[in-house]
Image 1 (cartoon, rainbow, N blue to C red):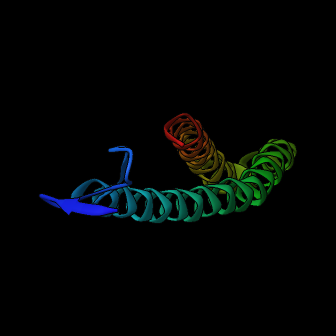
Image 2 (spheres, rainbow, N blue to C red):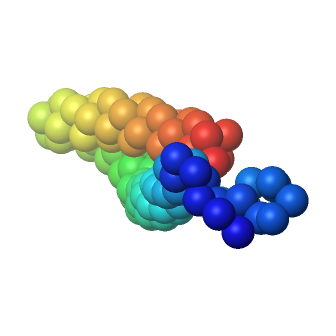
Length: 120
């Protein structure tokens, strides 16, 4: 074996080791492993976001149903329930708007998960 310009050759002249290439390869593999670990961590956080959004949407569905029931009861109460009808209408509107936004967050998070999987 002999060394020439950072390369190590066997007696037949075959390259056994090239210092810069091996070091660069090892650095790239280390960077790749770190990137994969970061992507896995981000994907885990995305899954948590999606799972945390589901109960919010469930509560909002219940809130909308309660708002509808409150409007029905306010209508039954006639003039005495007019103020309550306004409040229940607002609660329903807020629940609907929040549900739209929570659904959008879940969709964006799922899209981010897909992008991370395709980048891996």
